[in-house]
Length: 469
Image 1 (cartoon, rainbow, N blue to C red):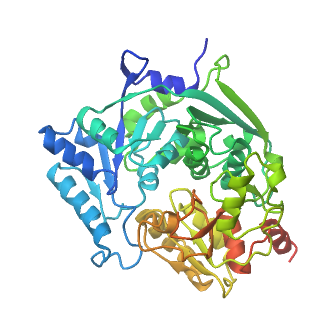
Image 2: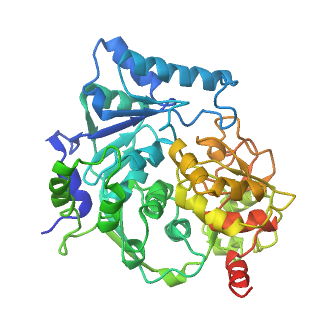
Image 3: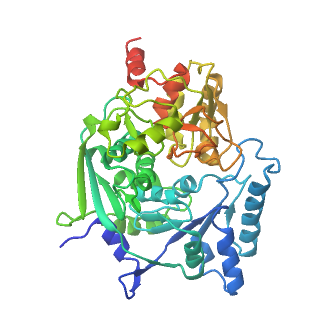
């Protein structure tokens, strides 16, 4: 019997199997940041042991960093303490750190791919659930807890239970104005936030193969939002072209050797998955969430479900009460207070290009505060070089420095209580973007159109108007 892509990579990293079915997995690359690493460093220190291999660790500051005045001392005491502690720990253990002020600083799941650190066939972990982003390259990448961060630091291995396998096939052509964010929000709306629990997901099909690497990262990033352990996409020419020439890509001498291995990373025809789902790309319209988990999403022209249409009506009512919405209502024409474009889901250069292309020559609505937070210093520099910053600034967007920002309300960028934020981030839980904040998840294009109109609208209508202008 053949193997799935996941099985090929996972099996290639098994060090040993222990009683009870757990496996010891070797980890190729360990990303760390300021939030989940301090306790792990303390544990290493107390045990009197060193790091197994400091060269397999990549460190950056992203969650707690301010996105304004990054050249000044951090005002928030807890944030400053965590960032300073990361700096101290990396200095003590001689780990390369992309901290504030470094040309490569940025969100951990943005800088790994753009530097060429992330490669096909790797095992990658980080004390952050959205580590699944790196699976877009055909890597087994997943988030771990703080005790596991310490475990990897000490041994470069993890004691883990092998996940089950799932394949999600999206065939067909995406409609005008439909992006990868719409694909993954559509999938989660169909499978729910627990539909992938216990599984590693492989995304396949013609619609997936047609996507750029940055679009693929968006899909794998949100695998965790349906309960999956991680997501993967088989590497292909699109993958190889993206990696080639990046700072940590294989050198000319090693490139052909790497390609030979990477080209074997696909699911065999006779491989068997524990679960499979098939969806048609033509069925996907611009998506928007209406509730307080990413599974509570719908096509932007559809209606919020009624209590008769859901399995748990009490949960629906509780969620809608928090959101200030009504069962059976449309979201169209709902006034919006904030638009946030950023996060490890949608803060890459392609995302900024999509937004800039639409808002060129336009102005955001007066009732909307719109901020753009690039995923890294490299993205920021490229946006400036391409003139995107000028376009966005002239349209009334506030341009910030790199960081996780308003995705998670852990820093200064919070959404005020009871105000609506249309966001390109990955989670819309109660209080996720700040106490009482109301979050509507969308694609970068949908966010751009809503920023200009000041209310929820179907972006396709405005694209059609432009094409006939």
